[in-house]
Amino acid sequence: MLVEVPIWVNILANFGFPIVVAVYLLMRFENKISSLETSTQQLIEVIKNSRQ
Image 1: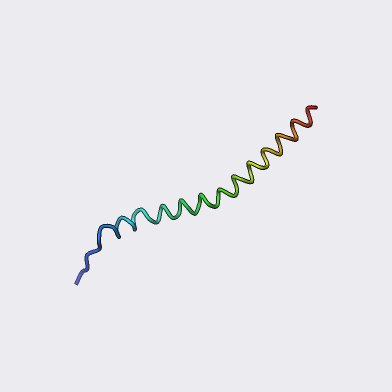
Image 2: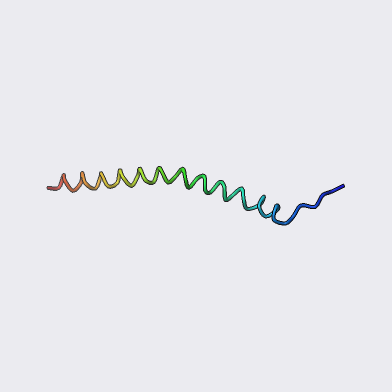
């Protein structure tokens, strides 16, 4: 006997996984982007100080 799966379960299976992966990657990249921003600001300050 085959049990019918509700449509929302099918939608969740199709779209839920990619959304979870995207959120996970965004959270991981957020730390790296923040670190890159800090390094860029420090580099700008070093360049400004070296021109004086």
